[in-house]
Length: 353
Image 1 (cartoon, rainbow, N blue to C red):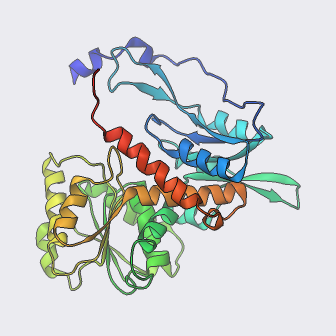
Image 2 (cartoon, rainbow, N blue to C red):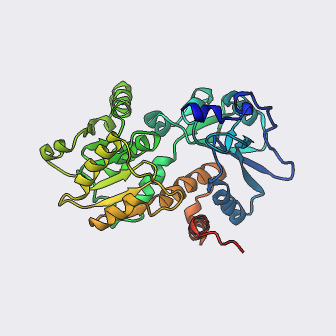
Image 3 (cartoon, rainbow, N blue to C red):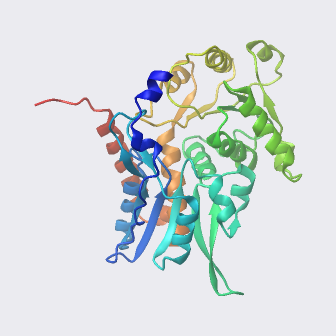
């Protein structure tokens, strides 16, 4: 660890000079992608495709900039504006139409907004800010919601034979972060799962999800229990196996003892006689991950994370533009083509001429 610390550039320890948040005058509407790092995000081109199709002079700007690249670890080092400055700007900017929010601000930004939707409250994270007009005060309000759960829902519904095939059957979450929380909400709210198993390398992350869930007001959603599976031997005692699995971890091989333990538990579920849908939420650098390959080999219907990316973005655009993007002829296919091309370009081998 000492070698890592010593290799860091001194500028990384200094407060970088703040830069103005972009607000070009030639545009009618300005959206943002707030968070960091954003070097590989497909959000701006996805939304630009929508704006162009609707004839809008709008653009989405990523608010993440590289401020130190030499001798930094991990390179490059990026930063986004402080949350107070960002919220103050979008509150006062007349052309602001909405914002995507990513790490590390998904939780912190919520306390600075005027209102939250049920999705944001239940999931405990905000990935989208949209505007709502308050007729009583004649003010525009900043409202936080979470469209990740919509992305999960639509990715599943659009790639399975029926919306009812998961009702009354267990689901499984592999992971313990924000995406796992969105998947839990989707399984409870729309997929109709009877119970939700959760497997993760870090038991404390599972415990945090369970603790947050207990603190929420009683509701029909909470009647669907979250059941942690900590060890491979626990599988033998399960009465039912999942009909749907959502994987919400990076595409990295397991290395630590806890990662290997969690992978073996997942493999135990995959090799069970019960088969269903496997949604692989990771799509970087390529959607067809090691886990997607494994699930397919064992007979699961693999749904790629790029599908969830598309549908959560479509829901964001619907909130911002007031247009049902699905109803625009050919637009969904344009978006899918864009995402497919972008991913192919990322994984294409580099040729030195």
